[in-house]
Length: 304
Image (cartoon, rainbow, N blue to C red; front, side, top):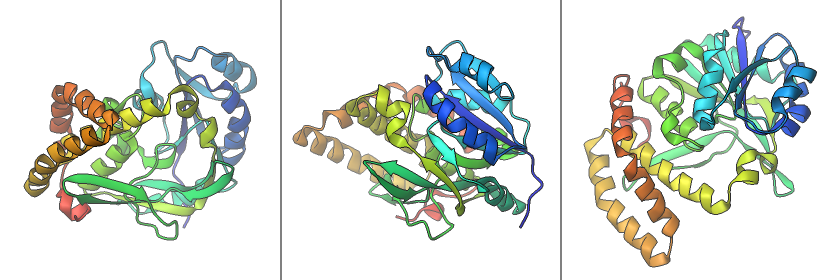
């Protein structure tokens, strides 16, 4: 199937001039007719001058104050004119024809987002990623990598995916509660599913993802990353659980999990929990906004 959708590609950047210089030419070659937007999150390197000098056709959205991944992406999407928004990280290199397989999926009016197949370069090897599977277990949302031979997926990655702009705007884009990073793409995917939309995985749309060069791994310690991931997992559950049975399970198992973490010396989980608890008023506000769009129950989307 072919699509005549207009496309805007949004690339969030933070001090990634070396990645832009290497990977932006591949984006321009793979998507010559798309609007290309680089959303710069108050970079202190030469990203802006590089874009002006070497990539004058690219639209630049520049923030004077650092917003984090979700806020930066939202700023870029706000300038987009395409019916379809494609998000690509600076450490992502799309292959030829990746775009036509993505846009073709939107001929189905129920599709809200489509994920790419990532050739993920990790520790000297390549792992195929992009499709996720998930379930609710003991009141916790458990997700992991899935095989790439099916089209159903639990979420689409914010680093290599396409979104229907009208639905993105309807749901309010990515939630900045998750800043600086992690879980914001899972949350947006979940909001789409709870609103009754479809998200799919397209294994013919291929990108290379060079994680080891990304800003998270080069800027944050592994302890920082794990602590933020724990925090955002709790935020996700508190924002999204609507089934009474899941709430009861979550409330029953959380003290047990925290006690187990303390026994094992996993202070990062306890720290993450406390960091999430501090944000509880904002979580409640975000939950109220999101709940206006909910059409499906949690257990109808991901059984336990």
